Length: 200
Ligand code: ATP
Image 1 (cartoon, protein in one colour):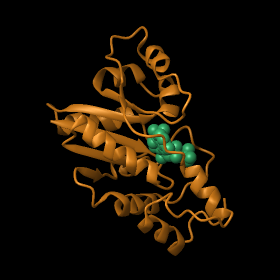
Image 2 (image 1 turned 90 degrees about the vertical axis):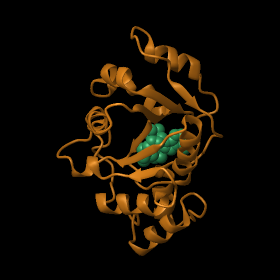
Image 3 (image 1 turned 90 degrees about the horizontal axis):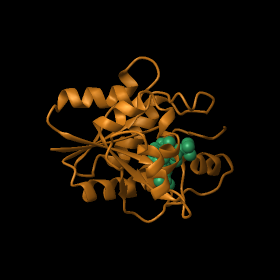
Image 4 (image 1 turned 135 degrees about the vertical axis):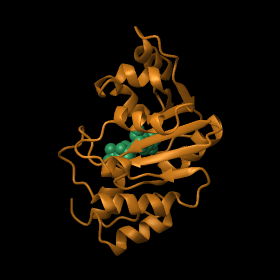
């Protein structure tokens, strides 16, 4: 059984996330793909963060119709800061025989060695990376990541580049610019309805 995990702040979920989740599911032939919003990332202590329930609701709106995806509140329910190693352990415990694939963006791959127990993480999952910038030297990034470890090289997920970020969405809303097409339509309506990101 192949299980995928993609964590993030999803503040809010955007169309890039959805597009590369589809690619992740198909390329790896995932049976289940967990999408897991973080309660609060240790790297983002100073950012305006929409309430957990709003980030979770928006993910449900964006993902519930996609076969194989399960939006999980396991990090939101867990006390304290969200660490991926704890999430992976929880999923391994639930599916002891599964192959686990962890998807991260290229920007996170650059910071991967700051993650809690990154070496344990690298040896217990198949790391998958989605490229974010055109001029990225992905082979060098991979070499640096696994250098000195016994881990298998990460898998690159083949997708076009998506020039969208949650930061862009939040800034666009606060400046009154349209976010049409940058987030799923249901998420756009939710943001308006709940007046999210109206001020930063
Ligand atoms: P922010 O703009 O607030 O930093 P974000 O757009 O990076 O947010 P996150 O929820 O932090 O969104 O992203 C979750 C994961 O998706 C991270 O691993 C991140 O690297 C990756 N990711 C997000 N947007 C893209 C994108 N456009 N292309 C590739 N990877 C992305």
